[in-house]
Image (cartoon, rainbow, N blue to C red):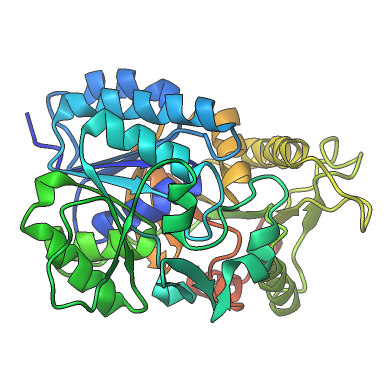
Length: 397
């Protein structure tokens, strides 16, 4: 049986993929289990040939603390069967979800000390004085700090954990001293800081539960698997593709705006419009839509978009296809409707954008990203990299 080198537990799907992608991009056999309910069966299926990296989505981002903790504890117990060399708890870089409850549940289940550093410097997210800053602004003063569905933990992380009876020692990745022999939170303001942090944990790697986001995952992947390798190319010839952007973050909205401007021939479907599901139009882009300035339940939006994406996939001719899904809730809803159990991760197309194939099928490609990630021209550049504009594709069909 192959050894599992890294086990990752994440609270949502895009987070699991985001943490797993740096390992896949360095040649490691990396698979993301779409939902906790599939984990035990897949581990049984893979037992004679385990992937080097297994990540599981516990779907706990929006649960209350006790239920989130239960799911994380179960995931950790199941993954302990494969005896991973390293445990990684993926948390949101803006601290949404049940960060404390999940960290403590996994800490108890695997019996290791916490080392927290959710910085992602490449996305402007750093940790200073144990507090998250986004583009130089304290998290509490950003739009992320006002998430209506999953309110983030605000303030210094040692204070947040102290309110739950757990003491975290502050540590700086730039310190010349070794890591403390206690649970700790580590400041990191650059990728070099994260490299130093994982190096500091290396001497007693078996003692630590590493907790962070894509930045720390990248540093660990570099240490374990070396330099990045070219991913497999998404086939261009005959490729059907669809962008589904459900996130309402300002960054996602700007990315959609620029794609529409660059590709004026896009066929766009607004999933919340009553006619959307009955329409036979083959969309290039699915967005929530609906009446402006009206709030919509996030689950209703996710399911409406997933139904429209499923209908579009059913209209495609035989051949390779690609789904680009922005937003963890949207991605999860789509893959549930398509009955997908795992994703074979291929690479990281750009920071925060994971590429993979559904259940190892190289005709069915997927790219995902968290809503707030990526530079403004990300979708424009992705479409250009795939070849001819979507408008020309329609002319050929």
